[in-house]
Structures are given as C-alpha cells and as structure tokens.
Length: 473
Image (cartoon, rainbow, N blue to C red):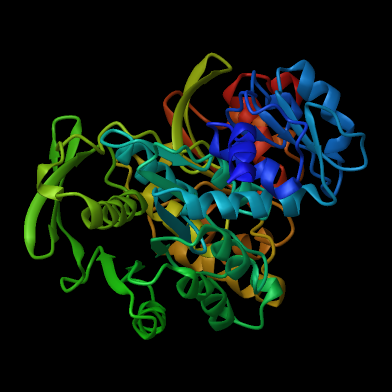
C-alpha cells in the first residue's frame, strides 16, 4: 500500500509521461512536466513538445537535441548522452518510441482506422480525417507518415479525448505492414487497391496482394475490413478477412452489390451531387470533384463512417470543399511569363495505377485538348516489369483524347515510343526545359499536368514553380 502511495506521488496526470517514465525507469523526470506533441524533427519542435532523437540513415537526432530544447522542447528521449531532468536516456530511441506508442494504444479508447494499399492512402486518410473532424475529435497522421518512423510517431500523438485515430501504412517489402499494423491494432482496416508499386522487391503482383493482406491479421477481433470491390484482389482479401471473422464492407464505382456504390453524378451549379446507395438506401452528398479517384475516396469514407455514425444524419456538404493533398492532383493557377496556366500537381509519386487514374481525370476536364499538356517522368521501383508497364501507359494514353505528351527520364521513353505520333510532344533532357516548355509552348489558360515518381525530382521542381522561384532552376 505504501509503495502504491509513493508511486502515485510520482505519477503525472499525463498518461504519455507516465508511460515514458515507467518504460525507461526514469525517476528524475518531474511529474509536473508539460508535454504536448512528439516530433523527430528538431526544426519542427514547438513549446512543450517531446523530441525523440532517432538515428536515421543520414542523420543522428542526438546531434540536434540542443536545437530541440532551444525551440521549446520540454523533454528529449536520447541515447549516448548523460541523464538530466529533461532527458530520458534509452538504448534505442526508435524501439522505445514504438513500444511507448503501442502501450498508449492499449490505454486509449479511440477507434483506430488504418489504411494501406498501392496508391491513394494519403488522399483517403486526409478525406476521412477532415470529414470526421467536423463531427468528432480526431488525430490523423500528417503527410505520408506511413513507415517505421512515421507510424509510431503519429500513434504517440493521439490524444486521450480523440474519438478516432486515422493512420496510413506503407511498405517496400514483405513483413513491414505486419510489423506496423501490430503496433496500431486497428479497429478498421482498409485496403484501397493493389498495383505494381514497389514490385521490384516482389516476385509478382500476387505477392504484393499477400503483403498488403498482412494488415488483416492485426485488425482487432470483431473489427471491420473495408475493401474496394472494383479491385481484382477483392475476393482474395475477403476470404482472408472472413477466416478471421471480420465484418467485411465494400465500396464500388460499378458493382451494385457493394455495401456502398455509386448511382449517378449530377452537376448542380458549382457543385457535383453524388448519388449513392449504402446498405440499399439511396442518399446523396455534395462534392467539388467528379474525378474517379475522388469519388472512390468519397465512397470509401462514407463506408467507414457508416460503421460509427448514421450516414443519413450527416450534413450533405460534409465532403464539399475538401482540398486535394498537395502533389496528388491539386490544381492551382500559376502566373508565369505574363500568362496564367493551371498546374495539375501529380508529382508526389507515380505508379501504373495512380498514373492511369490521373490520366483519366485529366481526360475528363472539359476544355479543348490542344490546351492540355503533360509532362511525365519515370515510374520507379518497377524492376523487371518497368519496360512493359511504361509501354502500357503509352497504349492507355492512345485510348484517350490527350495529346501534347512530353517526357523526361529513361524508362518513360518506352511510353513515348508507344504513343501515336500525333500525341507526342518533346523528349526533355533536363528539368529546366520544362520551364522553357511553359514559356514557349503553353498559352494563356492552358493546363499542365506533371507526374513522376518522387525521386525523379519533379516534386521539388513543381514546388518551385508554385511559389514562382523558377530562376533558381
């Protein structure tokens, strides 16, 4: 009894602080210490944040502890340093963060929604997060925090009052989704789709589907699995989910027997009225987009929310005015060389599924096709499948009304060679020539879509164009 009283004196009202102290055995940290969010980036630290000094491939966070304190950190989790009243010293800071996040997860009542898939994870997470946030308290992972650093960090930033936590899980190879979803233990698991992203690390696309299925075994007992019924691995994933006795819900643009399916889209002034069936009830919501990828995300989001809320009671405008995530299809008007152009930024990443989706969306924009221009960079990490998949993209473009297709990169030349001659633009050698293209070829009010894998450097180029820093290129 005496020990419990002593321990209670040492305990803080802050659950996170108690977990950190208990896990590390540090008794010199004041229970009155204030801690808000956690970060692994010393530059992003704000007052009363915790800094986890993690050693990455290129940088060791332990070298930035002083900067974190200077920026207002109240506590740092470090290794190879002396203990102090503001430092907890552990052997491995990433392992420690992961363990602490896992314990926190067990002690919170928040419903956890976890998203994986080959593409569309971040866009879907943003739509679910922002929509649910209008009716409940929600924490969702920022940007693409979907790896061994981002997932535990996002989980640790869950708040006691959160009704929902929404996280995405990415992977490069087998076993990663299993590892990360074990930490999260989702109540709801979502698989958006299966494509050739990161195929270089797998024997074939079936192995990718199997790796994505790792999330299923870590969904809590009695939980829900949300699947895309238009995906060719739907039945494969459904079988695995049923073996685990999960409740399977689905969404579809085309299949009427999905839990949630699209009925029709009507233009209503500046809005789109999206009619859908959910559990055989017909309802509608407003959206500012009619693009296929956005409608899929809308259907998936409605399916997920329906687990917890009465969909018929939601405001019809709850999804309206949702802004597309930067680099994933956001359209901004840019003024360059005394003319205005509409820049469609698809430069965050590229794989066959996301590129074909972006091409369909671009083709749907109702303007003269001579006013549409494309710059395509390489789709990377496709291994032995690269040539075939790049050629297939060219064949798919030939089925659209798109022309003015310009390419930059090695693999994308296969796309260019498979294009009809009347669709070919330029083979661009260096990124500065994209600026020349805008200056010399595009006219006022033309549209330019730029898409390529992140490591092609197109993303940083587009960000420079957005803020008008083209002289630095």
